[in-house]
Image 1 (cartoon, rainbow, N blue to C red):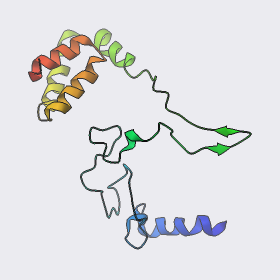
Image 2 (image 1 turned 180 degrees about the horizontal axis):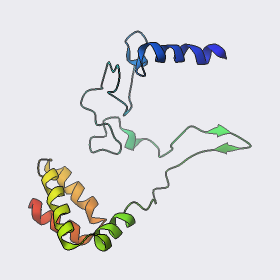
Image 3 (image 1 turned 180 degrees about the vertical axis):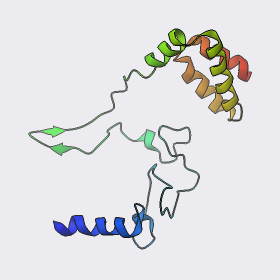
Image 4 (image 1 turned 30 degrees about the horizontal axis):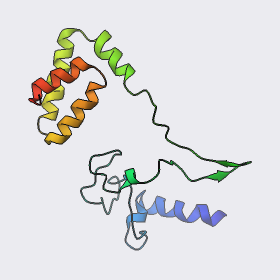
Length: 148
């Protein structure tokens, strides 16, 4: 039991947190969204570092929504993504109730400026997401980006 803790801990101490990326220590197929950082040997190419993403380079969306392996207590316990999180109500309150018109205009200008260099399908995806915050926000972004 002591060795199970001690050996990887020693490697982390001597070689850094990415010691498993050194070719002699490396698993055959690293497929995750963790890359870069101290002592990084492989950043997995152009794969994005977040999920969900448009490229889905690891085909994660084709796998089940199960978040972690089962484990036994007095019966099996699993974790699932139920998909009904409230991700937009706070942003809606902020946009509609906190910001004044000048601040809304400034926010739209900043968002449009950042999105202007993105590909068309990514602009559309972002504008649709901001539409979940406010229909006004979506319309103003579409106008600013010329997506109408």
